[in-house]
Image (cartoon, rainbow over all chains, first blue to last red; front, top):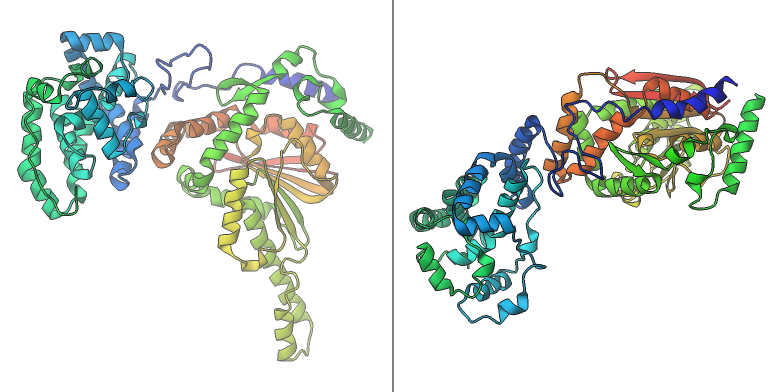
Length: 267
Length: 318
């Protein structure tokens, strides 16, 4: 009899609300009607967690360079101040403000590949497609933002990631390790994101002496020069400039031709 | 006594009437006497801190373990600083199996408990053999050597069945078994079965010991799993459960650290977020003890380890 009563009462007891959601445990938010979720995919994190994530992702990215997701996490957890500066810069520029308002995304679903292919040779669209084909990359491999606690800044960093391939095209850099480091230096000067700066400084660690020499003597100075000269590349509405010849765009931005270097073993 | 038997009979009737997918609407529990108002709540449950329907929870938990399976052991070491090995060793020493024990390890995916059991029993068996030989006097060296060599069953009749609902976890477990080779005759007495803790694919009264280590909080209907445990154990059989339990203070920061570790090491935040939340959602030691008693177990006790981070609950089917 006693057990019967007890078993009948127990579910009531357990129904007394969800168990102790202490303030320190990061809220995940209920499924419907996100409490604390600012955008799809957002994971709210405490300052301690952000610090640990930053340290952990930096270490893991160095240990295993193929963990691109760790580089992304590092960028999100360390970039708050730089992102604010970038966002303010974008607001001041007319084209940038339009981007912030319209929030265009670059992915295979939003790109009209046929139209891009039909564009004249030498145009931005053509060159971009060519770059994607030759290097066998796709714009869909960019991880979505998760740890930025501001919805507009989350978009800014997402945009920064998505135009990374554009920068490769603009600078004429391939996707091998040297090319990536050069683009990272350019981005570091342009955006000031700590992740770019760290990547630029630590990326060359695993390079051979010859590549390092070429990098330091020619490629990096060129990247820095162009980075300082060019206006903020996040302000360009690339989706409107597909027809613009690449050469003209480069002139507009003040980007000179990349130095031709031949390193044994690299394309 | 009468209540026990009628309870068992009733739950048998309930189970035989159950059609696949019928679960949530059929009133469960001893003598079917649940509050009617429970019906609506019974179809929703918790997945960590989220509220999900019961059908969803099973699927979601499956996905969590599917994605963590490969890194399960590494993550366990990271999160508990290797202490989980000690907890599992303590579980085995509490179990104290002897050659001939039939063990069912539920939710035992990667085989940690099963392998420990096999080693333990093998050591016991060797000890027994040594004692037997010592008791026999005037044996020649050849006869002694022959006794040691004739290993018909290095485990002395013990058997362990590892049952898990998740194929990936079982796959990892089988790989581990193969990697450890035929040491201590592990090809003997080890079986891997795909099954649901709420509906075990075994007959009644089959096992001497039932263990579930860090698995029961993932089950959608814990009371059903406990009833199934009661059913498949032989009279005199023992139920052992190793699970995280409520701790008041010191682990607060570790609950923040665990999802971070999951993200950095395994690239998977969400599964480890689920882990810490599900720990928070699990009933306290006393409450769980009452649930075990409800399923028909007697002499139910629990022992908290490492200042309450985990607890081992034990009950007997008498």
